[in-house]
Length: 357
Image 1 (cartoon, rainbow, N blue to C red):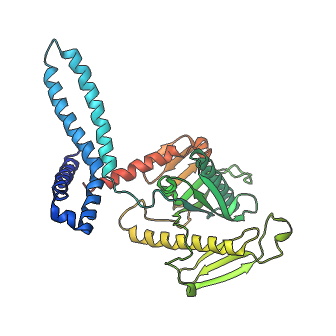
Image 2: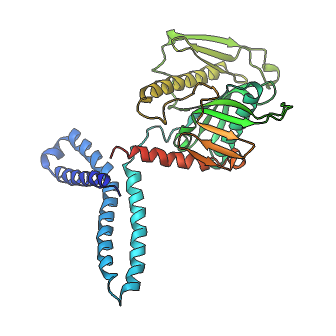
Image 3: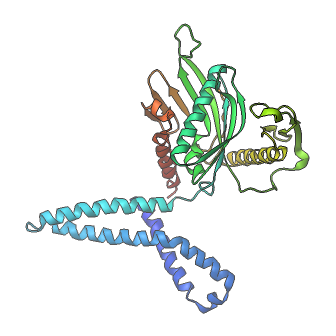
């Protein structure tokens, strides 16, 4: 383990002991506000301190067993014990590193996912449909619920745009790195010369805030709200009432459409929720663009050169350009086994989180 991390842990351990003494002080106990503050701080440090104490004890045991390796009679037994202690050491260090990484307050939240066809016309829309199916299959693995909120279908299949809500545990934790440009390279069905074409889609992952009727980041005076008739399946009700909603946020130019089979009220609430998430995501992206390459772009430009990933069909290859990862399991990933890419992204993010130590 890096010396800088050990120093950081020692400081936390010392502070933990100081807090322990302070919490037994009568004056602090009588100060309800201060006592609560220090108690929370003490509680937050307890887990990592306990792991650190186990790690330090294990380090001492490793040093002790090392001396026994020189003993001819005890060598084999010491060798086995030494191997077990090293294995335990790796597990403890991993736990310590995990505990040191700052928690992302959005990790436990559900999210909105917005997929748009960008460069490439019909082929881009078709690929947007394949990306959406990939995320739906991935969601099924974690028993997440997927609810489509709005769809603009492509003329030859797929989607020009699709917005959905994905609900469940730790959705943002696993999907937050999907935002950005997704580039596909393959021979379209309409291509007669057998040439490989390049198309792009953009994906935006936006955390879903708790349901509320008030959206603090939206001024009602900044909104232009239009109603129109819903389209799609729905029997006699569809195309007979203006239940669909289109909301334009004038300062930013964000436009959100939602259509439900019956309820204009529900459509408006959903549209405002998506709009609020877009504004929050854009503000967070602007705030962090200088701090982290991972969070640099939410939507991207949609140009062929703008990509987080490249999906190369002729070679069954997929490359994540942010971490220089290439795997030849494209068909498996499109069938929902997205953790092949997500797990390395999470580990890379965690290593960046520790780089300041």
